[in-house]
Length: 252
Image (cartoon, rainbow, N blue to C red):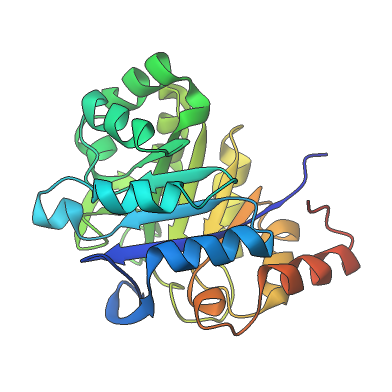
């Protein structure tokens, strides 16, 4: 049995960490370098850094901020936002990231997943899927450009496709649950986890330690990601891990 991972997420806009609700109403959450140092010391298993406006603004990821954050970390570090080519991936990995996260670019050019996987190894390629339930479809729809653009892709089928193309991991965010703090969408997480053989990171909706246990036990997630509850010190990585151990969940 692999241990479950707890992953804080830094959503970065204009050099600051921000957090919103359902991808809007963003408020400041601090300095990315300071927060990275804090989470590294706290016992986080990994850290995810998402330049949330890079794709929308049509620019590259903030490379200097990535370098500064990477210099503070001894844990695996994933970076996403504005990565559109193999060359972009090289730049991010050279700057100190261990993995790159593709979202909008993967939908536009699925072959990029295979290119990255072949060149760097699948363990370096994470595909982020922003999912929103669509009543008309009767299932979840994939969104791009920081949750602004609906696509024709259905989430389960897209997850299976990215796994087949060589992604090493899926970062699955429920847009419906994001920032609401009512718990992860375990139905969505389980549906994707059971449809693929690669690890799935649950994201969107963490409000307290119990929600992580639900993501692992009901949602079958391999890892769980959270932002605001850690940034605003409503709970800590250590407290979540202690709770999970008490529930019989294997954590590092």
